[in-house]
Figure 1: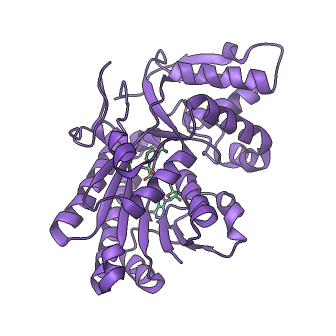
Figure 2: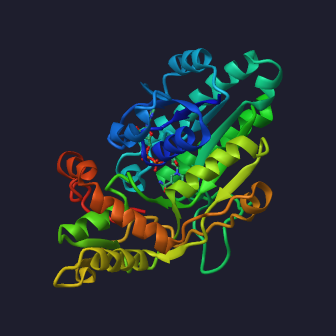
Amino acid sequence: MKKIIVTGGAGFIGSAVVRHLVANEGADVLVVDKMTYAANRANLAPVEQTGRCRLLVADICDQQQMAETVAEYQPDKILHLAAESHVDRSISGPRDFIETNVIGTYSMLEAARAYWASLQGEAKDKFRFLHVSTDEVYGSLGDDGLFQETTPYDPSSPYSASKAASDHLAHAWHRTYGLPVVVSNCSNNYGPYHFPEKLIPLVILNALEGKPLPVYGTGANVRDWLYVDDHARALSLIAATGRVGQTYNVGGRNERTNLQVVEAICDTLDALRPTDTPRRDLITFVADRPGHDQRYAIDATKLETELGWQAQETFETGLRKTVSWYLDNPDWWQPLRKSVYSGERLGLDAAV
Ligand code: NAD
């Protein structure tokens, strides 16, 4: 029986990882999550009744509690996803990003190091700390080229700078202390349970409610989209078979401009739930985000050839699944739209 700690496991990607580990890998999981606005216990509902997933509400910055928690649970692996993750929030209030993404990662690395030092034999050899990060650490691409694992770091936003700092800490804890760390850098995710401040769920829900669909600038910024369950499978594989000290880029070769994404959502909704006027009429261009990176695109060759991972969803199949999920699950998103996030609070919001 595998025992795995997943930090940030009540968030968007973390909960997809937990659902995958419990349902498909037979793992027991301890979720460590502070339950910020981005977390939702309902994300874990599909697995909580199995009795194989437990939630500890705690702040990863609390180093003593993290050390005690890891020592007590005795995990085979730690998958570290807890983070402040929304670029626009990092621009209006960077402090939480420095605390959780930098200090919190330091705290988790130290807790893992003390625990790993106490292990012996096979348990020590097999232990892994997977630090989950973003392709945004590499900065912006021009019209050509792809991010590789060797691409120099060049972050633009407080969010990506804090993630870059945490990646460097993770690698340093391997090189300096020998902690068996692996780092993954993934492109933009989308899928079910995505908090409706991010571009794809925001546009789906605004379009359903006949509200404006905000697009930054001219909508020409390019992102490389990956369906969240493909990311969850990649993380599970990297934690199991990735080489220590290595970085693996994760991406689905699905480059789209933001405008193409918004138009594809409109067309998918028009097909699944027709209205009199095409939803593309709701598209509204808004002032661009400061420091907005032009293009992200991932070369996932290392993950594909070395570990045998392949994305299962194309952008079209993944988007259809995602739109259908939001249509089928108003009980999940309606409370968030009403009480937590109305779409107007940050004054935009076309966040990617
Ligand atoms: P999310 O915002 O949906 O979830 C983050 C989770 O971390 C939440 O459940 C939150 O409560 C928890 N958290 C925040 N601060 C905490 C703290 N101090 N202590 C404990 N828990 C805390 O984020 P996400 O989109 O699921 O991203 C998860 C990870 O994947 C992040 O590290 C992010 O940088 C990375 N990532 C995200 C994307 C993406 O497209 N969303 C792409 C690549 C990498």
